[in-house]
Length: 293
Image (tube, rainbow, N blue to C red):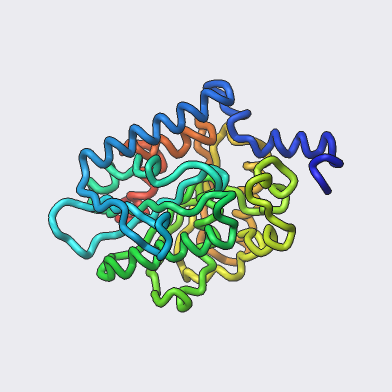
């Protein structure tokens, strides 16, 4: 099915996979501008109030850099939350991705955010390899960590889901992944190849199938790692469908998974609010890490 030949079907898919069209707060252009502004300013604030190690090289390419937000003092045995940004694999960077660090670091949690080669420079296989390399690199940097927790938003949730399927022996590490938060994610890439999103990615059907989490559920090798599938109330029906389908597939495989809809949020503020300590998802992350009652 080509976008040109599919007519109304392609138009509807473009609409369903345009998260900005579904915001209840503002129009499609304003909500994206507000998201970039909010996350950029939040990252600036996090850098101002936490101990940071910025632009650490995790791979051979100049673009392969990560930032660390670290607890005060010189501890080495902290939990690490790895956050993978969204932007449909072709937008955003670590410069907008440290916005949630402050409330987590204040509880003794280190936060890592990273850059990957966004499309069209990076293809799906390259991006996934970079995410995996960055996780391996932070493990080598802090081998005494007390556990790795993964969190991804939108395309970043897809990347986290695929990272859970990694054969880590190829990367020379054995990460102790203790939890994963997948927020407003895409878990089946096949519909994406028929949308505007694929103009930059240029995924074939074969690449989309190989890199779809819904196809790789049985490859997840994190043991009893709890997973939380999150969707915003004002995500599109297709984002809700994908999240439900992936949740059910994980559940049927006997994996520890829960499903959370955050009422009153859209695709963008569902993740922006992680900058607030009293936000429901921030509290869920703290509860998972510290097993708070």
